[in-house]
Amino acid sequence: MFKYLLCKLKKKIYPDPESEKAIMGSVVYCIHHKEGCQWSDELRKLKAHLNTCKYDAILCAAQCGAMIPRVLMQDHLRYTCPRRRAHCDHCGKEFSGSALEEHQGNCGHEPVYCENKCGAKVQRRHTQQHMQQHCSKRLVACRHCAQRYTQDTLSAHGATCARAPVPCPQRCAAAPMPRDELDSHLREHCAAAGMACAFRDAGCRFKGTRQALDRHVEESCQQHLALVSALATRQARALDALRSAVARLSVNCSGALVWRITDWAAKMADAKCKDGVELVSPAFYTSQYGYKLQASLFLNGNGAGEASHISVYIKILPGEYDALLRWPFAHTVSFTLFDQSSSPDRACNIVESFVPDPTWKNFQRPSKEPDALGFGFPRFVSHEMLKKRNFVKDDVMFLRVKVDPSKIVAV
Image (cartoon, rainbow, N blue to C red; front, side):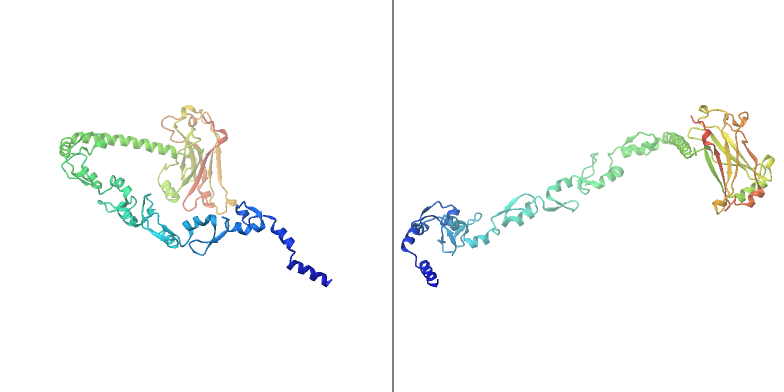
């Protein structure tokens, strides 16, 4: 077995001449077939082919040490070989390959874009001069106000510059002046300016030069006085109308009034010292277009309640919409005196209400002047009861007057 293996090994080391001849005669492709070489022939001819194959790599002809396929040798020698000789496209100087690579990007003759982004292309050696003298984006100081602007916006700034000199639009003899002083000149100094009369808001339409204006003011005192008087009259009417409008907007139209009576002790003392002292509430409406009402209060009583009770009444006042409402007034009215107890659950309010009698004069449509006394309760609450609970607290009393909303007939 060992002898057999040794025999096989000898055959591999010393092949049969006939077999070797057969192998050398076999057809093969060039080793650069994948790179694009189309050659194919006997194996014995491959070496000779490789000596001329354009895809086979050989040492660079300029002896830079690189192995370059023959087909790429010209491009290598022209563009990439470190030992090639080439000229700069911008300055025309000759360099070796490696020196040219260092020179590129630094050549002073190469056109580059301006760093200020003005869009211009200038040779690298002239960039500083361009940015200082020619660039449209360079900063330039306005010769009038000294503020700095880019060159391409300086002319637009000059059209509005506050310190730029401008001539007087009235063509007076004054020299050109800064734009921000022109208004003062026209208002105070220009001899040719047409000036309006100081009483123009009152209606005077005079307009002329300063000299003519001074003369007009001296000669028109009576006319100006009449204009001012008429203006004051118009303004007074407008003010009255405005007050009326504000008053209408502030009127209560909810059908309920909570009347806050302050300084109760002083008002009670005044009522006891004088006869017939009556307190009246702010007017209120039953609805936006409803009846106009007002509460009346006698702290020391009235009629049957005089000197012992508080008397309370309701008056019907002439309203703006009376012509559209139903008469007589026929809606339930209630009065509530609030107990201001610190514990709301223990409060004991006093409530009185009535349904109007349609035959009573008090509830007919009111004339321009309302009745001196409305309808209500002469003995609403006694003075003794006021002392038993917190109906008066911190010198303040609260009285609510309410019209039953379920029975209000709105227009």
